[in-house]
Length: 394
Image (cartoon, rainbow, N blue to C red):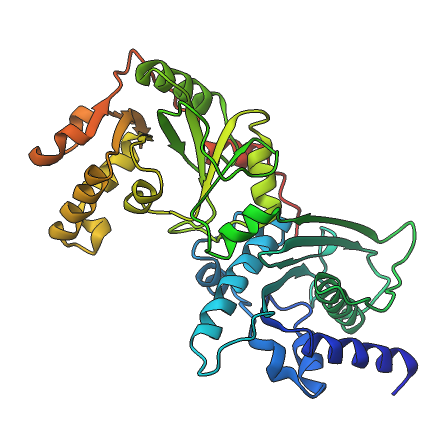
């Protein structure tokens, strides 16, 4: 064993004894680091699970939806956030309770490396680590033709281990990249105390003004909240918020849930980017993906939604096909003093408004509609992202 191998062995030993409880998910490239973790005694202290979602179907299953780009920073961050959530789930199923100092962490990587066919695009890797304390992303574009597959694999494994060590406050060995050829980028966001409590599930709501650190107390006079992922926020969102504020007679805050029903949880880098779009504006962060949960933590609020969302709220299909579950959910929302202001949406080339939805008679008082003359905007965040993206060639 050479000197560098000894240094890495000591680094991994310190990782095992750091109190970390982690799940690792890599799409193929860098998967050898899992073996390196387990070669050093004590792996059961730190590694709860290792996943290699190698095929598109496996990656879609891991993320809960198909990624817009398989090899991207956004995908790596989403994979790491899912891995952190999985780490908490795995630990909860073990007979022994984790120590009070335990850190649940997700580590992830997605790569495009040397293969058995030439690649037109760059050889690259996007790596991410996420916990309630911090999110850290590293992207490296590798010099083409400089390394064979094994050498690129080893380098990505080193980078993953280095990212993991850095996240735990352990000084990693130095990794040499080719100056002027390999390109290295990184970004790290640490949680403020209230965000950390939100991610650790000890706090239900955090209020903030755009990118500024969170506040425990709601802003005065808030009459409604506009839930969404806002990826990105666009002119239609802002127009609807302004119309809703006039209709309700007071400010409408943007609401972002760190947990989503059909998307990966939000990491701190993604969350900072989403909130940064609302500089100086009122934003409320929750862990409430369902409206019954939002109503519980934001009682008395009017939720500003599109007709597509309202349609799901009154469709038993979204409650496991159980009409009684739907009624109980809507009754709970009403019990917390909440209701909905509904804007029409264009769906599959057809404009749909509240009047066209089958609202049950007993819950019609929960819904108030905006007319098409008051508001109509056919912009879509998904379509805007498609226009903005320039997918690298493979």
